[in-house]
Image (cartoon, rainbow, N blue to C red):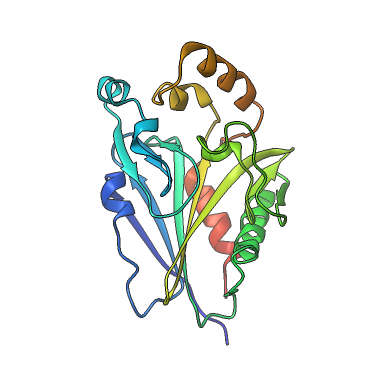
Length: 222
């Protein structure tokens, strides 16, 4: 039986948006989330000390920890598209295997990018790490994430409970690692090396975010 997707939009601080609980009973839903101020979001296992508190304060950037894994992501209003996709365990799309659970969502994102003229490729292998992947989210490539021309464009992290999962997706309008690295505790030499090596690992999609969301929803039709 076809199951519709509930769609919601919300604007707020990254702390409030990341703090939303997974309501039970869960249902298929897509949440398009917009931060009202810049935020550096750390993965669940990252130490707060990786962030440079003085740099954050000077730049007026909020520091937040999410409940899903991975490295740091810089969310900037109007520059980062953040979409949460929730799925109950009873859904036909559900997969108990964490390594395969995001493949269907990656295919939806790839289809959406294709409709916008960007040929996306879904990563279906294991987590691919690099020198900076424990620090920066877009330096790694995980299952279900989507690349264009060999560069990561859509990042996906997941938070799972007994009721289902929330897949947190991020896409940048442009990929510029410098502003993110400036908010981390790195000495000058490491920051310069990271900026040079990270420049080519990811890319953005300079399209109106409403168009991107519409293309994704078209792929998620029941």
